[in-house]
Image 1: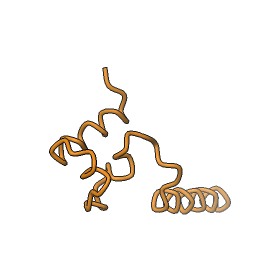
Image 2 (image 1 turned 60 degrees about the vertical axis):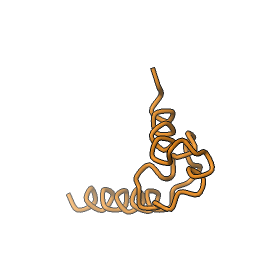
Image 3 (image 1 turned 45 degrees about the vertical axis):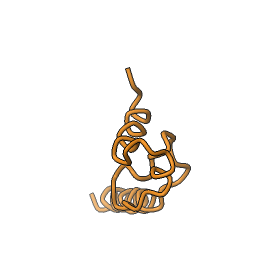
Image 4 (image 1 turned 120 degrees about the horizontal axis):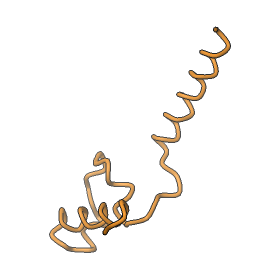
Length: 66
């Protein structure tokens, strides 16, 4: 059984015709799998971190208004 990260790596290899260098050079930066293409969890994802921060601010404000 594959872990989710290994499954993503396998999909990226399949997408790049099993060329490891092509996975590294992948031009599809809008692909949701892009940050995980090396089979490892990225240390920081700017877009998701910003969204998470904004949603936390919204939740805190919502609690204050109740």
